[in-house]
Length: 209
Image 1 (tube, helix red, strand yellow):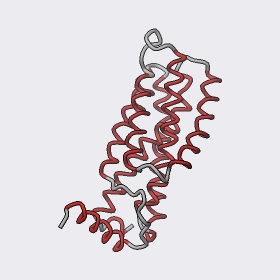
Image 2: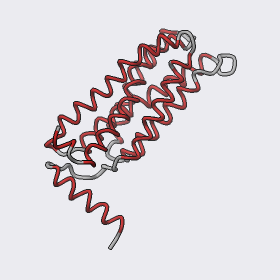
Image 3: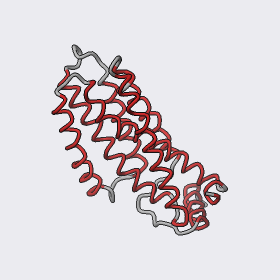
Image 4: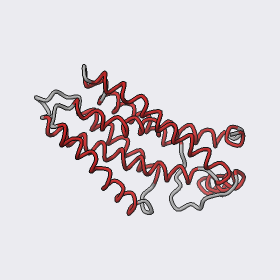
């Protein structure tokens, strides 16, 4: 803990990725509970949400070596948030079946983002503090899941309190990704000092001689 808190760059990274994780966890755990508030076929909605996790795992598996972590997380949280917000629109404007499709795509984006975040977190922290950092990030994801059922209950009265809050929070939390460095293609460091030297070299190469 001391090694993380004593270094501003480590604290900044941990705070940012935990904030992103909170928003993603809120939607990841809350969206499947919230399908009953859509007004569409409950059994189909639950089935499609369950099936969405499989292609998201395949997408992550095949593309994780080719996609940028930071831009992917930012894009996926934005897509998930916008589609979740679309689900609060009256059924007369957007039919229930269309909202079900939007909800499934929103959940798919969140599932993919969830998996990328776990990989991204491994790459953000050196070996000496990685386990502790991952434990905190995982707790942030689960903390979002703790809040989700309360919003789902409120959403039975007004869908804004479920789909609306889900969408706003995951979009806002996703913006914290811009505070994080890109890690695709970088080697994983073992010590805090090694990570600092590497970060300094990257910053120097951006500034130029």
